Length: 286
Image (cartoon, rainbow, N blue to C red):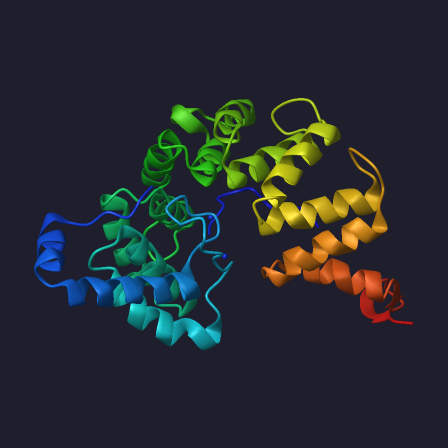
């Protein structure tokens, strides 16, 4: 199954302290410690793996786990007072709890403080009409802000809408923008790899795509790990290696990638049973 790139949400800057919060924290070190602890717990439960604001030592989660939602909201709500990352992650926790108005409000505040991931989420909301009235112009404006700051999902989504006011999407421009960000950013490497693998916005190049996936996988990007598994399994852009494919799938699955989990299941149970209409029924395992 090929991952979709249209209006990519996070299912992917620095921590900003307001002047008032900084003064209060300096005056009361115990409050600073408490806020830091809240942000650490907020990160653990609700950080977005693709968020440029996420510290390198924070793994992140593809989605806030149902069992963690209430706890994530509690700690992220406290952390949000001094951190735009906390605000963005509070929005993720609210969204996981289907509290869209609260999620939109948190993302709006985070975007105002410069969170490019929050800009992307708001853009997706306006582009799809989720929680707000559908407004493609507003979505484009938000994606443009995120793209200008180098956010890979902002770049991809802007291309999907037709960046710069164009009447149709401009994948070639998206390739150009992603190439700049892909020098160091794992999400950009992954997104550009997808475009090269599919031949979107230019020539198809499996070798270059695999190289980009490998770079992103080295940074534990779940999607890139899954793609490396698929490329190694099929021998696309390089050597065919079933053992390496399984190892990549396992790493991606451990990070919550659903496509990797399905791929592992197919490796364990390669035969399928279908009904008389040809519809999948179940796998056969040996």
